[in-house]
Length: 357
Ligand SMILES: C[S@@+](CC[C@H](N)C(=O)[O-])C[C@H]1O[C@@H](n2cnc3c(N)ncnc32)[C@H](O)[C@@H]1O
Image 1 (cartoon, rainbow, N blue to C red):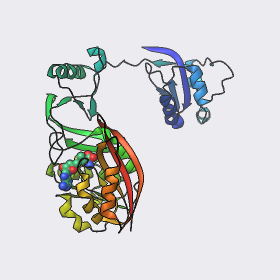
Image 2: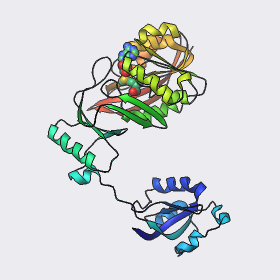
Image 3: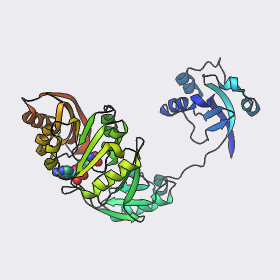
Image 4: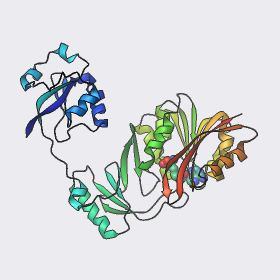
């Protein structure tokens, strides 16, 4: 099936920037295929006036009626033009995707992790209904897991009910990195992706970065990809195995040292080593600040994660760090950030704290 629709036509090499601009403004007509022909990208659009506004097109009034033939014969010198143009074009219709919500009649909440869907449903029957709809939908999913406990114990691993699929191992992609992990054996939360990216963007090539609670490497791997020399420590042997595998998968094994131990027993080996330290063990990070200060170099940023009451979410972390680091270091809280709401009146927060000797 195909149809004649208004499209933005743009030289292919400039197409991605235009597509992103249109997608950000929600102006792409999703029912039609984006089409490439003779060096041109044709992006079907849903609102001509709004596109005109967004792209500031010089249309002199109307949408020109290019027929397909004209468009097809656009010369390469035409295609060299940087300016997007509005045309009408016959493009293919997209197969509409069936979503779980359409099958269920309500919008279920779930997280995606690789080809797995993660549910948080107390009602077993509802969980099974959602699982069946997820599998029947067009989502590229082969595994459905329902949370069967809270994260618990030292390793922060939770129990899962396997509702569909063979096992709990997944391969997840995040900001250009690939992470293999077994949800039944290690901690991992896709919800922290944006926060991890925020921190990763601060990392400079050649710096020394130390993750005290590294898990399967969602901080360590992108840091190493930016050229940092990284040490990741975790008490969970499965997490350390995956951290090593993920370092290999992402081509950064030469910049990653993975250590399976209690980080308090490792700190003395890295005395004064770190330019950057990640402490993502909310609830008990305060018990580890002395080790962090031991690992810190002369100028070091600590990314300190905490879960606290909304009345004073940043105070306890700042006080714990000052108590451990002052007066040897000057302590500056550079960022106070709410990462997400954790529970009613409880916030998961991050403090970026600079220690200068
Ligand atoms: C909340 S998870 C964070 C993992 C990872 N940084 C992430 O963002 O996915 C905390 C991790 O700390 C590890 N851990 C707990 N106590 C530890 C200790 N004393 N020394 C080293 N690692 C520890 C757990 O095994 C777990 O993998």
